[in-house]
Length: 594
Ligand code: GLC
Ligand code: CA
Image (tube, rainbow, N blue to C red; front, side, top):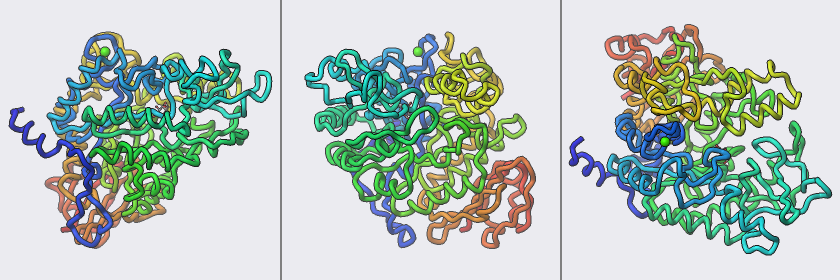
């Protein structure tokens, strides 16, 4: 690509060093809708360990990411969110940080990071960092100090409590990764709180010094020129002072009401916004498990001075048989209800983030679509249509744009993820439930499904590494890989490219008002978007059967923006001239009135 193109792109997209919401000039319909670059952007999530290995050690790294930026540029995304790349002993693959201002050795050096950042900016791609500040690693120097003595000046950086008695933790809370949420520390004979693994002690946000340290660290990254933060479990940073036993769920009590959306969470985020975020033109997205639309309007309200948007998890929270573990699907009517509720409730008041999957979730096409060979591509495109036509900022998880699928795990020793390994021990090895019963549930929901290496081509190890990958490559890499997909104009990859391009072309996709049609259908997800005189109709068949459908009158004969059945796009557009039609399996199309 010629240098001139980089440079002209650069002038246009480099963030300005101040926050500025350009007022919308488009009139009444969306009068409350302040425009912002992050509302119009499409974000691509990279899980660095599994994206691209540059030196043959089997682990993805920063140089690997830099080498694939042109691929991302070609896809058309605007922002890359990288899961953590900081120094870490990797108990939870980088979500346990031992130094916020160093790069994980396996991923490279700070020079590699700087190179990645400027190479991304040259291509007009912004870089969003994962900010993991609910907890650190137990190997972080703050914790190493903190555990030394009760008088240590870092003692109060973490949450220490006396046990209830001999061998009895302060309360019955369980951690997210199994086992109790309290760990006894011999040095001082007290317990520390860890909502995740015992190598992830929770920081004490009530300590002003902790907040200062975190804000200074964030400022340091902003000054480096990064473009935003995805904030890990940010809804958990504030805990109640009283810590009573929680309601029993499985073996332990729940910490939920005491540690999630705690008493000072909004105050701390407003402080963070004042001290750091408001000084830079960056974007922020909070991971806020358990969030409701009411709370989201506070966390990410247009003018609450906290975050730009949050991840909500209702649509990926199945009522599991065993905690989160299940092999069942959410009924379509329920999924539509949840997604529509978020679309309508936040409209004009806060901003949605849109996702089907991420590094903590199974693969979208396996979970919500159909990964059998005859339907994989069709259903992957259908899901993409359904999500990318909604209001909010879409997130694409690496490999989703290829229609990558879940991994056919056959034994627990194939798991690498701390959560899956502990869950298997806690539910199965303990005898709570049989292997036969539990296995399909954990296979269907394991986070490792998302963490198998990115499939680049059909060579050894899918072109991810010249060595042995840290986690097995999916067996289907010969059929499903970036090389094949970029060469095939009808691929899932090119369909995503088109969806991304459409979002840039039609403001109605970004800002239009949402309305659900056919709420009771268990087969079809149909909705409209409206911005002034422009109207979109989005039609998605979530089943492998043919389903009759009547195109609403206003859309009969309308333009087709995109369709996943070739015969419906291009030449055969006249098919939309008739109201009565029959949708094929997993068919999706979008019509637009002019
Ligand atoms: C978030 C991350 C997840 C991690 C956890 C603890 O949920 O997305 O991967 O294990 O926080 O940091
Ligand atoms: Ca490597």
